[in-house]
Amino acid sequence: MGTIWQDLRYGFRMLLKNPGFTAIAVLAVALGIGANATIFSTVNALLLRPFSFANQARLMMIWERLPEVGMRRGAVAPGNYADWREQNRVFEQSVAFHNNYFNLTEGDQPERIAGARVGTNFFDLLGVRATKGRTFSAEEGESGKDQVAVVRQSLWQRRFNSDPELVGKTLALDSKRYTVVGIVSQDFNFPNNNTELWTPLAFDPKEKGERDSHYLQVIGLLKPGVTREQAQSDLDAISLRQQQQFPETNSGRTAFVETLNESYTRGPRPYLIILMGAVVFVLLLA
Image (cartoon, rainbow, N blue to C red; front, side, top):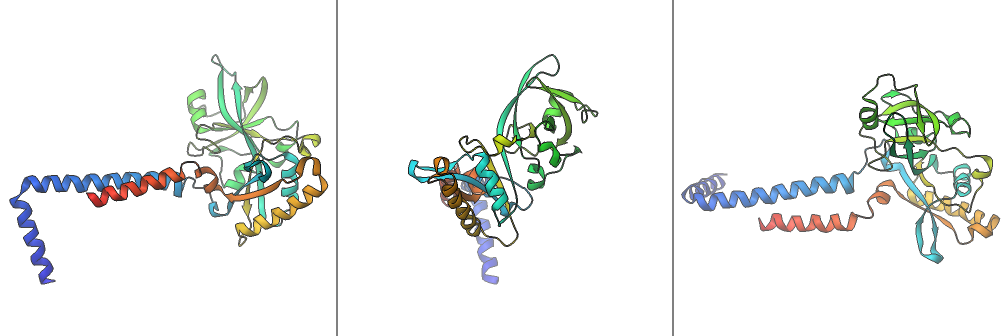
């Protein structure tokens, strides 16, 4: 300890004798640490923890896959999703959704709002609660009972001046009247950053069995203790039955399971990893 203390005092004296060099050294190290901290925060937010949902480790995206045409992640047909939901043994629950734009004509200024049509258990599966009102009930997923909406806090503040009586009122969306049943936090922006409005995804009996139209995205919540590999194996078995029962639409078509994080970070992931490596070298140089 005495030797270390002597070295520290000697180094400190040398730095005081060369204030110009000391200033440059401190600045270089500070810039290196600052750049490293900034980039690490970005990587953490965009790559390691892009979401903060409850049970996030058990949330899986389920895609359709058609290897013969090179499709690894494809949108899902309602009929295939219905089979997955009813026949699987590995998911606690699952939900389908798709992005949608709504024409809001309430008030003097019409506006096109980014939103989504979602299964009624969408918010429950993600562990999201309304800050005002409620989210969707099961019966609102039935055709004819689906003209209700949940809005994001940003839309409530921007368009409705934080009207405390908005829950229970109706909005004109796509020339139909929707009743606002709840408001969710500004922090909730799934499936896209600009999503501000959600309505129930309702299928009539014919749509529920549709296998030619592929437009849904699907999230599943694994049962506790079930692995991704087990989920993939279970859906492979269902896909095989589908191929046998519906060869015209499902020949060669299978399911593909990956984590929610992997699905939403696969685009920027390689670039962020490279950037992180570059910043580490900058810190070493500093």
